[in-house]
Length: 103
Image (tube, rainbow, N blue to C red):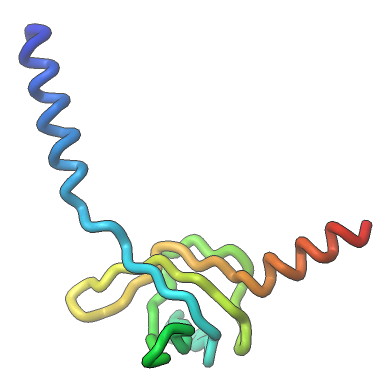
């Protein structure tokens, strides 16, 4: 491939990659963790405080969530099913930070 063709191909790939919608993000309190179905249900901290059930299969999980934990989840809606990409357990991060300061 010549240099101009390479540049055009790279530009086309960059433009196509930029067309993906960013993930949705929600922050809220864990209502329940269903191990059998590998889902977490949480109550959104923003009004109207809706409850969402989000699948965790394949997600990066920073600290196993438990009922009452504050979490932030990046997810996608895949044909009406919410699937997590990442789950950050803010409660566990805060506990770890406090433990680190005590040392």
